[in-house]
Length: 349
Ligand SMILES: [Mn+2]
Image 1 (tube, rainbow, N blue to C red):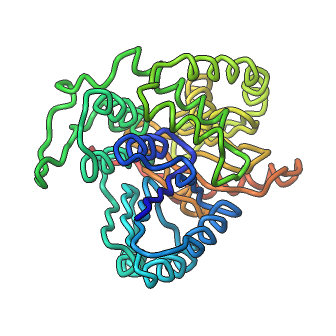
Image 2 (cartoon, helix red, strand yellow):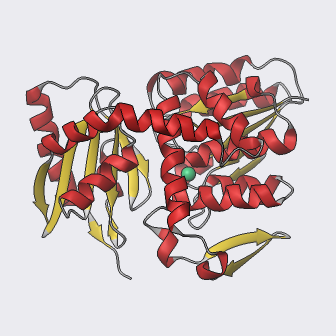
């Protein structure tokens, strides 16, 4: 039996999930693949699933969600894989629609989705892995990264133990310190730097998974890549700030900016701070991978959903065409503002 992992390739949650599986189940890196929501990577993963030879294998899909465009493709691939006598465990924490669950549950042996207090790495750790001290720390940091600026401060952390759920107040977990924040930022820089390129077998990301799997959360490798990232992205951060347009939506400032190379989270947080905007939208004008972030209490995910993406109330993403012309950018800004006016909600607290 071989274990394969397809994990979300864009953030630490996906990487943390893969690292735990590599650490505890000794999955060879050649059986770890990265997923993203649109285009080539999704098609390549679908092709991969169909092609996995033999029977009795296990595919674990982690921190990767569903959207309506992908359901049929993935369902068909998993159906072929399962019919050969293989197994599928899909652990996701993003919300799925009922139709998506109905479509995919029959082709999974275990399917978890819509878990709002746990990240993907939490799910992998609690449901599949033994525990050790290093992994506790890895999971704690990954959780903080996935819920950065949102759930970290207001939610209780919740764990599944012996199949039962119980919650512990966040402060008992000491989830957040300045050092944690710096590490979370560093890890997301490194993933940004090593990732991209639409390669589901990206050797650099595999190397990163390997380092993190084997105790390298605080390692020279990560420090060095981070330094390189900071050096190379400084001009792009400047460029971003020059392009920012601020619009008013329901009395709230929305900052929309264009650049490339910068980590999406960092781009949004920088715009939010610099322009005192509760909502920020970053368009990566080269790759098209775009992000929406909003302050706690504001649900901005409708913008991404309307753009055929998805995500959480305070952090979501969508794709746009690569290399937009000036006119297309203006039109995109108008469209985003219209969608924001229609969909952004202040949450009851
Ligand atoms: Mn996640």
